[in-house]
Length: 270
Ligand SMILES: Nc1nc2c(ncn2[C@@H]2O[C@H](COP(=O)(O)OP(=O)(O)OP(=O)(O)O)[C@@H](O)[C@H]2O)c(=O)[nH]1
Ligand SMILES: [Mg+2]
Image 1 (tube, rainbow, N blue to C red):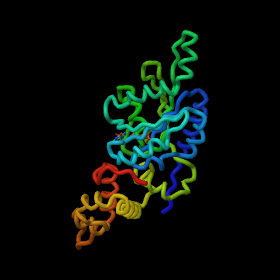
Image 2 (cartoon, helix red, strand yellow):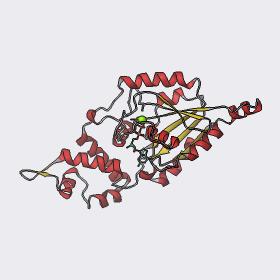
Image 3 (cartoon, helix red, strand yellow):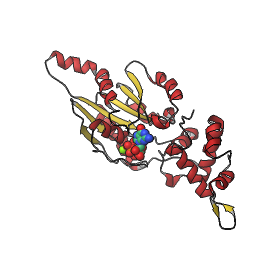
């Protein structure tokens, strides 16, 4: 299985983000806490390279916080800050406002000197399904952007005024045209950033089990009562078809779903 998903709306979105960046003060770059470094998209990183960036390591409630705490300092540098967040928790986005003010300080001070209160404009970017629209809604205090538990929910740019002189632009999730590194591609697939229809779920689940066996063996053992192969898990879960055979397709879907919903545990993949 070669994983590569780059539909037309992503090409369009990257073009629009490029134009938008001319007049944007800060880039809010959302990463999924379960594989944050795999969510760094070279196309976006190139576009945003001259802008202040706030990395938001999201879905922290599903992630291995200890590992994330080691990643955050690596994302920080001059003009770049990084925080961890659970965007589904009401009020969690408040810290973003403070960070945006700090990252846009030069502009704020410049206008202040002229006696004018300026508007900070930020664009929210990231791979599909990492929680961009949920974060934007959190900051709005209202569900203004459509969200959903699948990739490709947001199809176009959406500017929202979140009050206190801050405007945010939600954008469609974007990947890069050539996902050559298939280790990264697989991790994005586990996270739900790649459309499931193009994935071979049994192969993906086998890879996920192998990875979890290496990185989180005890969580895997607890979840499936010691079973580690798809066949064994099918028996533990009772996914048997007539004739006593294991239903491997259903088991593969269940394993991927367990990972995505956090039922195996709090995980951050290397
Ligand atoms: N547990 C948890 N779920 C989250 C968090 N943030 C978002 N979600 C869920 O993740 C799913 C995707 O959220 P969206 O906000 O639609 O993601 P998006 O990045 O806008 O996705 P696209 O528009 O498809 O690129 C939804 O089911 C959200 O409820 C979080 O911090 N923790
Ligand atoms: Mg969205």
